Image 1 (cartoon, rainbow, N blue to C red):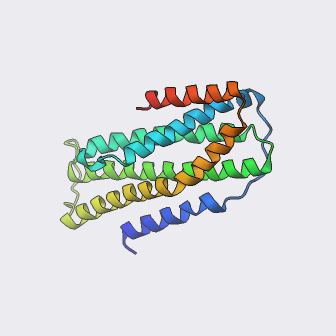
Image 2 (cartoon, one colour; image 1 turned 60 degrees about the vertical axis):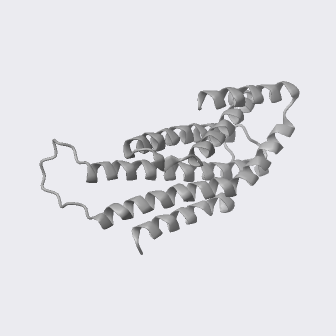
Image 3 (cartoon, rainbow, N blue to C red; image 1 turned 90 degrees about the vertical axis):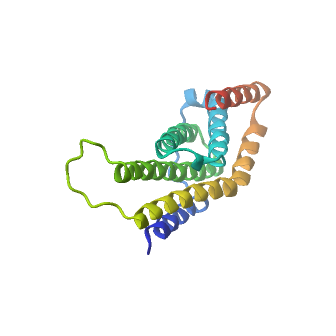
Length: 203
């Protein structure tokens, strides 16, 4: 199977975890984290909106180095969402809510792997086609076919990320609505404040 198709197939298989993961044993409730649940959710939701905005932008108008930095930044933002989801999981006592959050965690872990793969790919392109001067080993010249394959795979993975965001948005928005509807007025205000502030910070 060509490298490009193999990568896409692996991504699709991992995406299936969003719908198929099952809850494990419930973690002990961290009441300090539970107090910060609305801000954690606000920050995580801000990460999602910023990542969608970046992914849907004109990514390929940038140089390899700029795209590498962009993918690295995306990975950093995803890690924030992963950490927040893990913290949220530590507060839950409802099996249904825990199962929902574990599916959300699998989603974020998948996006993190995609961002990492894209970062590595652009770094590989830079090293293969623009080697550092200090490199003294005699390496074969990459072919035009290999360069095209790497470029096509990067494009496919970015498009895959866009499709995953589009497919996951309705489900994630339902989850967000469930949570917001359960907030008291003060907690709703804390959620909105965190969401709007982190949208600004992550811009």
